[in-house]
Image (cartoon, rainbow, N blue to C red; front, side, top):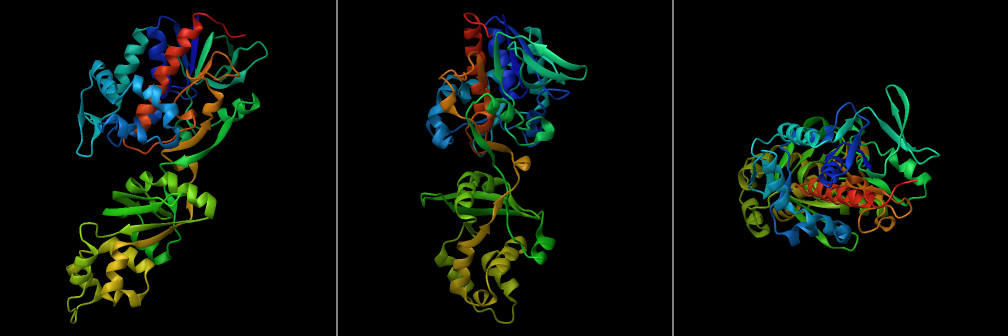
Length: 409
């Protein structure tokens, strides 16, 4: 009996590990020349494996999809993920933010050790194999460097990612294939993404690429709930991205979809109360310029001062009360999410309504799905990788169980 894993990212590799541990033959196929490419890219930022916060808080990060993701994560929680990494010879540590990283902050050593163990356990890898559905006999069809290939498998795990970073293999081409089989798909959307802002040419030229550090960002969800995060972000030529922008990307994206634009509010001086800021800015300015006064009395300079001047009229700059209010709640209009190809991850995907509790597609017996192909999203901070690994482990294990008593086609 053979299980085919299609996709060599974290979900696919974990599915292969779970399946081969259950005693079945595993072949893993990937369209790219090597596996784990997006995993390695994530490692360039330090490879945030998971998060140390209490499990209840951790699970809330999956929002309206929590009920579907929770069983997988409870079976492979962050503590188990750390133990798994240790089993590969990779120790982890907790950063000041509670995020969990490998001690060397690198992805490549972990991936090498993981692939070595998978091969030793019997997983067979087939790269440059692009899947494009089934033939009339129910065999998997692949395009390879040597032409067309058809493969029979007794169970399948699809783990081909979402639609972000297509150059690394997650191109969302599977949507068409499954849609043709009448499998319900929620349209893919950018998640953990940047947004467009209509900057003036002066501001864009002067500040694109500048980080905006230690600020708070407030956004309102569709139900009117205010959501606030503290951190930093980066001004881009087109708008804003990074850090706290990603944390708020889901509610902002939905507001833009419904209303055409979304207003968020920046607190450029989160360490000062409005009262204290007003008092400091009310000090006599004398012959000092407004720029110097802002720097000395409020610590506002550089890109923060640029943002202030970009948004508020000059008469506000001369009024300490209105100026303080603007610094504590500077409105910024976001007009569109950046394209899905630029996003860190995607929302949407295979509808959970199409799956049984074991992540098998009800209308395609023996076909399981895992990772970012599924209709869920979460912020950065280890939540994405944890869910990909956990759903991969669940799908791979259940595919092996199914394989022992059934056969496709």
